[in-house]
Length: 66
View 1 (cartoon, helix red, strand yellow):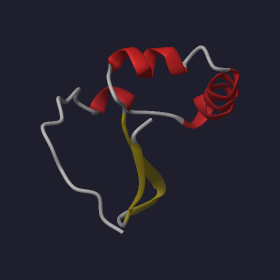
View 2 (tube, rainbow, N blue to C red):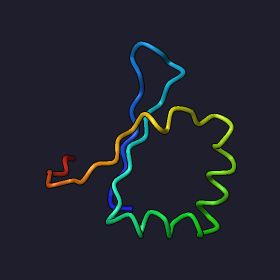
View 3 (cartoon, rainbow, N blue to C red):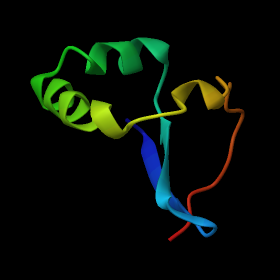
């Protein structure tokens, strides 16, 4: 994973948004075979909703901030 950010919804304290940036689709798919991610996904699945609301993007550039 290249980057991830976590945000909260100011209007709904029960919502958290996580945005991940991967090197490519292959790296993302490969992560699902790692035990650490399998355990995290299994644990988080009951509370994950709305994943289809996120579009697939081709990132053209950007800048990290500190």
